[in-house]
Image 1 (cartoon, rainbow, N blue to C red):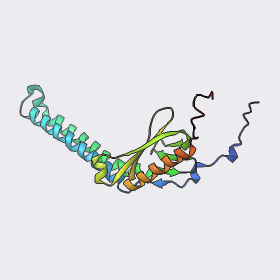
Image 2 (image 1 turned 135 degrees about the horizontal axis):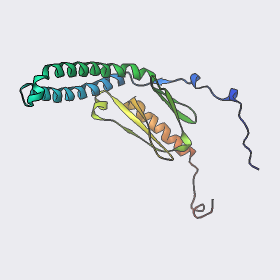
Image 3 (image 1 turned 180 degrees about the vertical axis):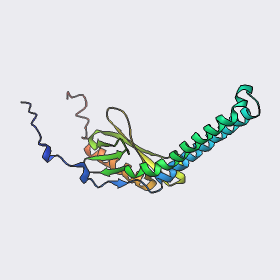
Image 4 (image 1 turned 135 degrees about the vertical axis):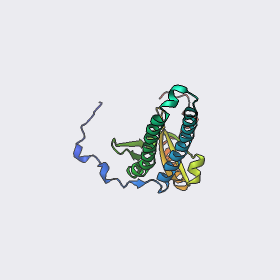
Length: 188
């Protein structure tokens, strides 16, 4: 007979007691470098537009160019400074923990979340890195559970990401029941 007994909430594990591992110390710098590259591209485009308007390329906007450009550059500068400062704040709130049966990832400054991926649901894993990641010695670990979607842990050291990938892959193989030729074609 089917039974679905109630579990007392006092017996549940407490997430605050998890020993969270921080991401690589250079991850915030890598994020800031990415922001800086984007800021430079947008500044170049903005400077070209500013030059076009200021030299009379658009007669109506040329008269108000000094007001528009001062406001636009001020807003752009403020947003750029915020975007450069944000990674140093946000990275401190990210972390991961490897437990016996799952891997946890936490993120978020204002809206915090913790994702748990049980090893018995994982189908495969992979590591990847962009050229900017490699410049800072970083890599990302992607975990693909059954049911679709990937869970990515960004900002790991290259060696750490590979060790985690190997560990999770070994756990997947340990959790997967072996099938034999005699099991093929048998009803489940």
